[in-house]
Image 1 (cartoon, helix red, strand yellow):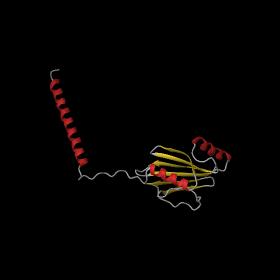
Image 2 (cartoon, one colour):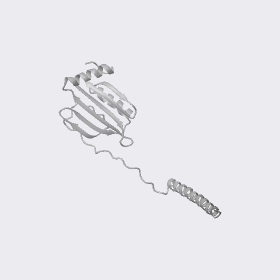
Image 3 (cartoon, helix red, strand yellow):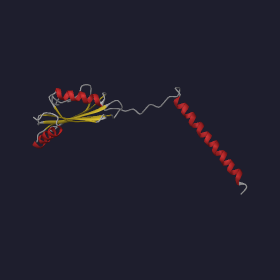
Image 4 (cartoon, helix red, strand yellow):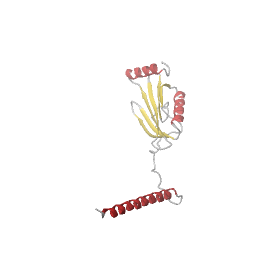
Amino acid sequence: MGDQAPLRQGLSSARRGGASWVVTAVALSLVAACSPDVPSRPAAACSLPPEIQIPDDIPADFPWPDGVSVTQAQPTKRFVAITGFGEQSVEELFEIMRTELTDKGFDIINTDYEGFEAELYFAKGDSLAGIASLREGPCDGYVKVNVVYDPLETEEGRRAVRKTRRLSGEGSDS
């Protein structure tokens, strides 16, 4: 049992030596990482889908903000959906979209603004409705813009627009 004391001392000094080595290695790593002479790894690149032209069969009053690239367009018999990306903030695009909608004769019947995302619900009379949604990302410095434009061909859809107008207090009651 008396032979174990030198062994404990040897382990204790090995731990101290190992701890010193770890501290030294971490310190050198930090110095090297902060050194301007050491090339850094680039941040992961983020890429957006390629820009496309808005198809010719999109309605003339389709609300799309200037300066926002179109990356996807889906015109169908029932609705039109366009997606793209802008380099403005959600706040800036919210105001641009509000102006675009009112300039094209739409009523804004409801809004939801949370800073990093926003929605503007719009209608023209009770025969057409849509939503413009704005979301930060997916790349830093970009906002995803999605606009869905839906000519309301059913009485149920028209009732929903009238109800939204009434409940929100926004837009005219036409």
